[in-house]
Image (cartoon, rainbow, N blue to C red; front, side):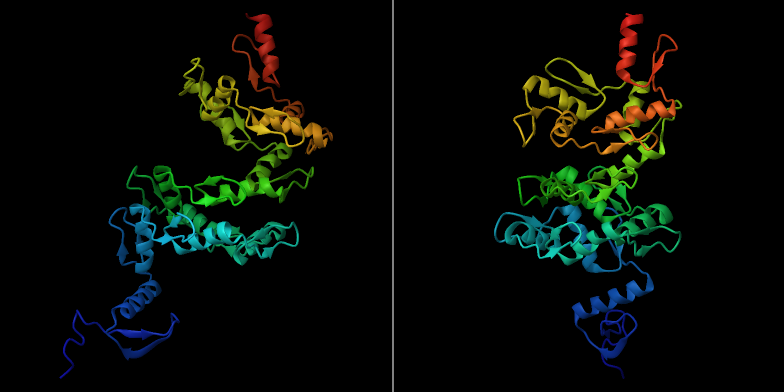
Length: 385
């Protein structure tokens, strides 16, 4: 007769896992923790996802993954810093905080540009900026990426369409746990990524990386056409459209197209007439929150952009950037058609319209059109007012 309970539904055959998905030994155990590990490995190998979140339906093969996921909904942050009041939902986030805030140690340095970091993995990722290496490949198309997380994002977005992660506050759904975690900070106001050189903090790690480059002066992304350098890869992509003339953002109500999404968003307000952002001082209304923020400085006198080479300060970043060009004499923006160079991106964009024959600013009262908005304003004032 077999031992009591052995082979019964409540006392399943528990085999000892030795650390390899393909190797399982034949010993028996009744240890609950060990049983969970074995079941997790078996589920993962079989493609099963037995652990489910009751809040949003997220499923996983690993119970510990579910526990971590649940903190997204509960806001629980069990990992506490013993030197300040910082806390985190995951241990790696606490480790990152300790390295950035309390040790200051950054032993890993890039030999190309001097970038320093506290973690070897960050340096490895950074080096791909210089080498262009993209070791992570999609198995269903020719997409490749420098980071695994980007391939995972691509597969979920392009090939599965699955969005198992849902926000219990507003119903937002996403294919990625990390995206849900970032989204939840919209509701909680949590800003776990802090700059160790000033009091800046942010909800997103990528924003912190961009911010830190303001301190280091690093501009790793360079245009091969004109030598323009920038802090952000996305800015380089947008800049390249200056040379190619590409305008991927199309208006669904007219034939307008734009090189940048924010330009299309601004254009669309012409169709809707919507201006939801209003100044409480003077009643000024605008379609964009950033425009209202800049406008408010007229009333407050605030000039947050300070020049470190003279006493100049500005209310808007664009004016500040133009001022800086006077000090350095730099003209990084070049026309690939005729060699024209300028210190300002907006001037190059205007110049390029001459080559393309584009006149996007049209008079509503006659057939006049112009390359620049100020010329249209002058026309309207002279002819129609």
